Length: 282
Image 1 (tube, helix red, strand yellow):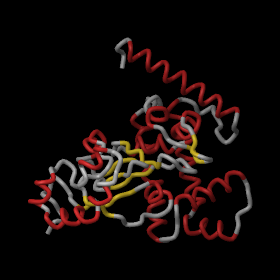
Image 2 (cartoon, helix red, strand yellow):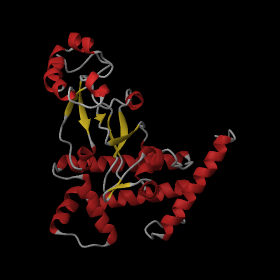
Image 3 (cartoon, helix red, strand yellow):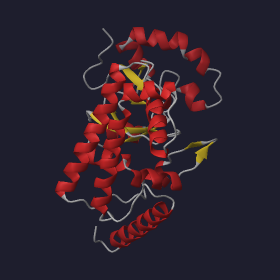
C-alpha cells in the first residue's frame, strides 16, 4: 500500500519528458521521495526504499556529482521552486525546451515534469492561449537559441520579458475559450489515434500553411488529427490575441515584414512596461 502516500505526497507519480509530449507518452512512473530523509523513506516506504537501494544506489555511487551520490534516493533535479508552484494545482502549462514546433499544452497537476520541460504554473487558459499564439511563438523563436536545427525555449529569454496583452475581460474569455478548444482537440484526437503525435500534426499544419503537397502519410495524419480544424483554431486564436494587443492591422500570414513589425512592437511594449514598473505604475 505504498502507492498513495499520505495525501500530501504522492509516492508513485507519472513522469513526462519532452519526447513524451511531442511524440507520445511512454507511461513512465517515478518513485518520488522528495522532502524525505533516507531513514524516513526506509521506515515509511520500505518496499520503495528497497527498490531504489538495489536499482538506483549502485549507479549513483559512481556519479561525479556529490549531491547526486549523497542524495541517492532522491530524483536528480528536484527544483523546489517549480514544485512549490505546481503543488496544489489541478493542471499547469508545459512546453518541451527543445522542439521542432513550439507547442504549449496543459498537463495534469499530478505529473512530475522532467528537466527537459518548461513548466509554467498557471491553470488559466488565457495564458495558454497567448503562449500558443503566433505572437508569442515568433517572439520565442527570435529570443531563444537552437540546438542543431531545433529551437530552444529559454525561460529567462523567451518567457520572463514577454509582455502579455492588457486584454479586456471579453477578450480574455475569448482567448481562453479558444485555448481550451485547442487543448481538448489535440488530446481528443491523440486519445482516439494512439500513433498520432503532436510533431506529426504540426508538420502537416506547416505544410498546409506553406501550400506544400501532402504525402500519403501526411494525409493519414491530416485525417486522424483533423488538422484543418487545428489550423482554424490556431488562426482564430492568432486573430484574438492580436486584437487583445490592439494590433489587428498586422497580417502574420505575410512574413517577414509583419514578423519584424510584431517584434518591434513587443520590444517597445516590454520597455514601456519596465518603465511603468520602475515608476510604480504596475
